[in-house]
Length: 345
Image 1 (cartoon, rainbow, N blue to C red):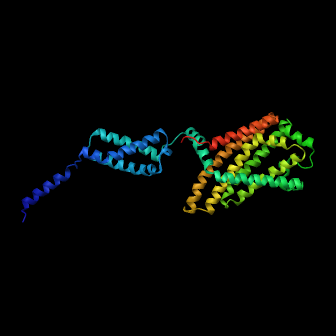
Image 2 (cartoon, helix red, strand yellow; image 1 turned 90 degrees about the vertical axis):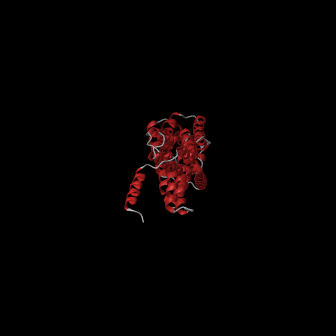
Image 3 (cartoon, rainbow, N blue to C red; image 1 turned 30 degrees about the vertical axis):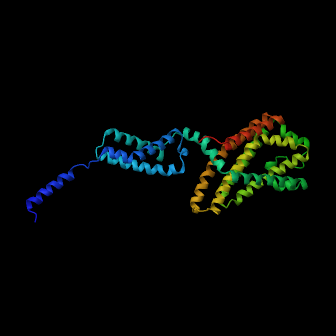
């Protein structure tokens, strides 16, 4: 049996041991964890020099795990009073990793620069299939509209409204139609340009917004826009002014039609995500599609604004057919390079 004195001694000894901090061998501690610290340091440095996009999928998955491990070792290092240089190194490493994982608020100017440098073109590039579908529907609508009006001019009034026609209809003479292409009356042209911009902006916005209805309304709007384009072309071509009308349209139309096509593509992405969510839950699929679509739509608004400037100013002051074609085709080439040319991340 243990005597009471011995028990008291053991109790005092146990209390003394519990009061002492747990000792950790610094060299062994470094050896066990240094590999994880070095890898975390490398990943964070790569993010700082370039961006998170520079990391592979495996690195992206490892980054938060390594960060939590570093936090745990930092806590141990502080509690066991390891050397100050190690504690300072871990504090700095964890702070750098935190900013890369959770991010920090950036200025509006920096966010805007990132939108134009990466966000918008990346979103458009991801919609290339939907963009191709919207383009084909536009071309198909234009061909059908052209053939319908050529075969029976009365189709024009069922396709194009009075506001859009503005006197450009099958009953107009060649001289009257030609005057609308080169007339320098600023008030008349400014009014028509404003109407046309508003009309096309509405089509672009509705093409995206109605995508949730399985993209059916979006497809109908895109086709209808093509029908109007073909019908107008048929009126001018029938009076021998097809080339001139195409030049009149090209100076702003390449930008404007591209914006409408991108808006339709964004609507298609949302609609197909609802109809065919794949392995994701329907809600998650729609959220992912909505993000890319919203970014592309935001950029399309910028394109419509640029088209409005070309339509309201450039088309009035530039009356040469060759110059109109040159400006329009240069804008188209610029958009294609901006969206689809590979770039560094």
